[in-house]
Amino acid sequence: MAEAVYPGSFDPVTMGHLDIIRRSARIFDRVYVAVAVNLSKSPLFTTEQRMAHLRTATCGLKNVEVVTFDGLLVDAANKYGTKIIIKGLRAISDFEFEFQMALMNKKLGEDVETLFMATCTNYSYLSSSLVKEVARLGGSIKDLVPPSVHDDILNQLRG
Image (cartoon, rainbow, N blue to C red; front, side, top):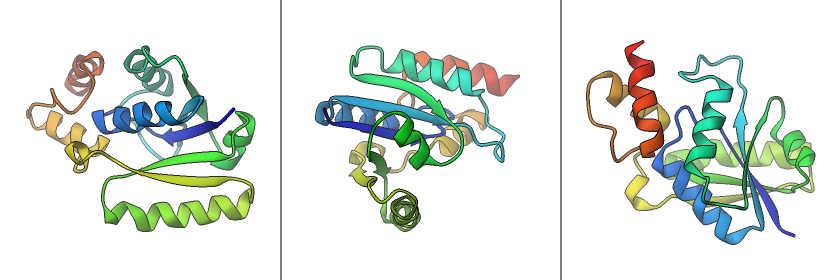
């Protein structure tokens, strides 16, 4: 059984994230979408809220499981029994950082492989940070995030 883990902060989940999740779910028997707990960041949504958003957005994908992790990604991969990490690439600028992370993960867990998946060109400009900025400034994020998350983002930003 081929399994993979797709990590991220998903704060908030975007259509670009869903693109990678859906395509990964067609390739692997099981995909663990792993929400990172990063104490050095101040996320818009709690870990539990981000997990709930992802569960709603991926509810039709029976081989996708939303999980959480803190600490090393290779430890999370081992915890969930997979040796494959999926990383989405939007642009060449993502590659340098992600390649460095892949090499570190390989050093920490030599049996763990990182597979890079280029995002669909429709979403190559999209990031969670950009979504939050557009929403804060009053722009439309309708086509940038799943409908199930849209109102939560606006409500959270309005306080």
